[in-house]
Amino acid sequence: MEDERIIGLYFARDEKAVEATEEKYGRLLKKISLNILGSSEDAAECLNDTLLRLWQKIPPERPDDLKIYACRIIRNASLDMLKRRLAKKRFPDVEVPLDELEGSLADISSGGEFDRSEFSMILDRFLRELRPESRVVFLKRYFFFDSEPQIAADLGISESKVKSLLHRARIRFGKYLHSMEEDL
Image 1 (tube, rainbow, N blue to C red):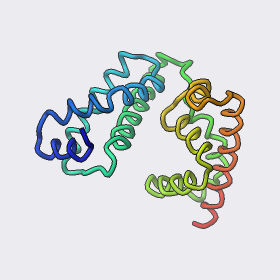
Image 2: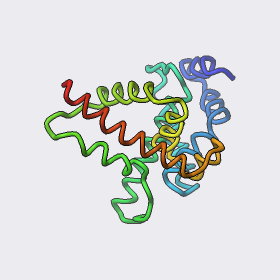
Image 3: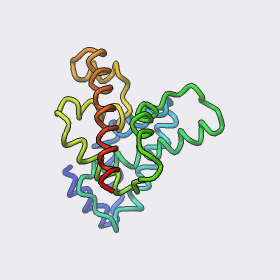
Image 4: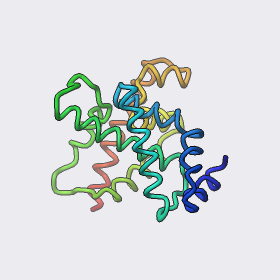
C-alpha cells in the first residue's frame, strides 16, 4: 500500500492504517530499535509505542515521508528506553554510536549553541555535502545504529573502509559545525 493511502487511513481514523504501517515498515522499525537496544522484547515494545504515537500524531501532522517519520519516532523511543535502562545501570556495556560523535560536538565552544531545528538543518546540509557512499555509511551508523560489520556487509565493502569513512566524516562534521558556529 502506498504511503499516501496509509496516511489517508490515519486521517480517516481507520485502524487499518496501523496494520498497514506495521506490515510495510515493521521489520525496518524493529531492526532500528534492536540495533539500539539489543533486546527483541524491548524492540517489540518500542514498535508498539511507535505505532501508537503514529496514531496519536497523524492527524494533525501530515508527514512528507511516512517511512522517515516512523523511523525517527522509533529511534527516539528506543534512545529514550536506552537512557532509562542506562540510568538504572541495567545494561552499562551497551555501545551508543553517538558517543563517537562527541569529539565533533565537543569542538564547539559553549558560547554558540544550536537549537534542535537549527541543528537539524545544519545536519541536513552537511549530509548533502557528503559523497553518497559516505552519507549512507554515516546515516547507517548514527541514525539506524547499524554496527560497522553490519554496514560493511550491507554495502559490500571492508570494515576498515567503513571505519575510515566514519572517521573522515566525523572530522569533517566537527569542522562543519565549527564553521556554522562562527556564522552565528
